[in-house]
Image (tube, rainbow, N blue to C red):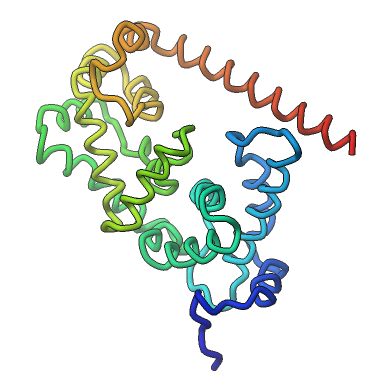
Length: 262
């Protein structure tokens, strides 16, 4: 039986070989990479180069014969931050380590551990704010709004790389359940708004609000804009979605034109 090479001694040739190995999630990786790194400008083809590097990092992780974890959708968001900050080689080494430690519950073949973690949200909130937990339960709210928070360490929703880095420093140095506590704390910080929507709206509205919750801002820090968001409800969510879709469409068109030019 071959010994697992320590990360620091991983030869570049071995890394390159792992990037080309066939694995069951290769098509999933390809799709995830194509919708990643939108925060990177298209100038000078940098996004395309970074996507190629991200694809190699993820394929090497999924194809590594010593890896006992599975690739999952959302891991590319975490890998993208590692890549932007650390570069390709160290991004792979850190991701490989994290997948076997802090991210282990999400990188298992089955999602039983993720479902169990999500079930802890209500209990955790109930410890510090029983009324809030009761209101969320009364509208029949399931904790699936927090799936992306946990499996991507909030990187899927945060567009500020600096904020992502601060959270990643915390999560890499802390307990694997720390993202759960951060998510619960964010909900409690917005308790008044959550209670208001629970009292006036339906479960779908509460779910939509929490999915789009800005964890970087406390209650009352958004001023009039924040209050208007509550009043706007689904209509504003729809407009935000349209604006985002237009931006992404424009980025894709730029990318296609750049590829045709080459």
